[in-house]
Image 1: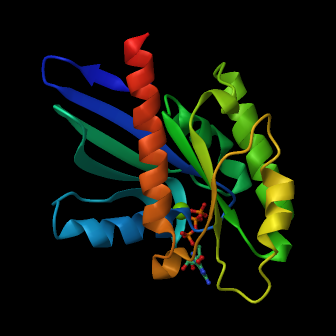
Image 2 (image 1 turned 120 degrees about the vertical axis):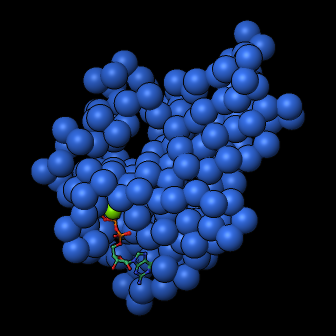
Length: 199
Ligand SMILES: Nc1nc2c(ncn2[C@@H]2O[C@H](COP(=O)(O)OP(=O)(O)OP(=O)(O)O)[C@@H](O)[C@H]2O)c(=O)[nH]1
Ligand SMILES: [Mg+2]
């Protein structure tokens, strides 16, 4: 849940990039970090990696004033996508205010996408949270590869919950789609917080 400090006029929000191994979660954060560095001196922290595989998580804090009068601190996390690190994924997912599911567009990875999406729903349910209760969107990454599945097919596999959510095509290595995804999920999360505050 978002931490809101009325005294400090500050809200802290956690967004988790989830998805199968190698889908490009860390690459999204690296691109955001590169682009934001010059304006906003924050550091990206990668907690243990092996080669370019995430073993625990990556963490990137961002600050904006998206809510009038409030400073919003967005904490972006990635999970380790490799199947065997589920305990770590559960920890990272705890208290998430929003989720970006990063799917790998390659044909050969569609089963891994579906398995990871199922794993996301299961891990949330263990925390008593239904996926449809939290803001989430889909990112179909690696659109540059020749063997990318059609977006319609990925929609069929991944976007058939009780309601459809926005999905974005991306090439994270080139930064394509990365900020569209970040902007959309942050707006969704902020809108939900404002709604919850009014209740
Ligand atoms: N061609 C292509 N390669 C990409 C794209 N995005 C990421 N990659 C590459 O895919 C590999 C895996 O990317 P990561 O960002 O490390 O993947 P991850 O989802 O963090 O993987 P785990 O940490 O194991 O869960 C790297 O070699 C990236 O450069 C893309 O859009 N197109
Ligand atoms: Mg990673």
